[in-house]
Image 1: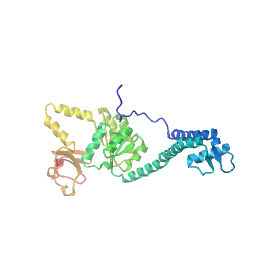
Image 2: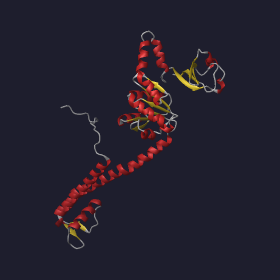
Image 3: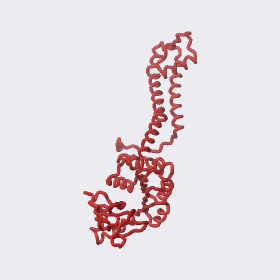
Image 4: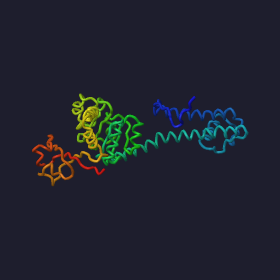
Length: 338
């Protein structure tokens, strides 16, 4: 039979709730005390009461509890070898186990919760203008990687996923993690969506993504929300839900694949533009004060290719691009320095 690799573990969901777990620990502690009590009662002749020389049941209960909790007060002591051996090899381990159960329970239900609560509030106070990534599958992981390449502080990226394993992976990348369903308001509020600058939704399902977008838009009306969809028919639905940008990677991949049949260099350049690891990339910014009145072609920070003005899109070849206005958003190609 092939031996299992020692660092691999089979895991199943915890079937015990907090109350059941606490009750189990209490019963275990009482069971251990009961073993010590039974041993002392049946061997009560090996005990001596220095007060009245009579060992009653109450004396046995008292002696057992005191011995398990401490080392005894000396008013009742074991006098026979059998009683002393029982206290040495049974009661002493019982005392240690009971204390371990007590300390473990205190840690789980008091200290750990207090620490987690304080740490949660401390992290929340540091979040503002941050980016929330809902879903850490293949797309979510690539999104976080690209954000970090673009200079975003990993601690200002909050990853929400219902899988604790995926969240742990995101935390290992330096991001802040939160286990939960991003479609629930309390989960988004815990991630401080109200103060977030951007919410990126890549849950892997169009229906769940729409719910996340709806919840995020309700809680954060001013946030920039972008979402991934798999079906082209759901793009309009996602925009109605409140997404500012909808990305269809399947459709985009099909377009690039079709262009690759005759324009491999074009595909390579497009790939270069949409990543921060290439030689050039697309950048969006608000027009500078010194640029107002000048042509888009006169932009010196890069190559201007498009203007977003009052909800309209203006190409670099159009007459309106000859004069930049206050409030214009310029899309330009810039050199990344790579």
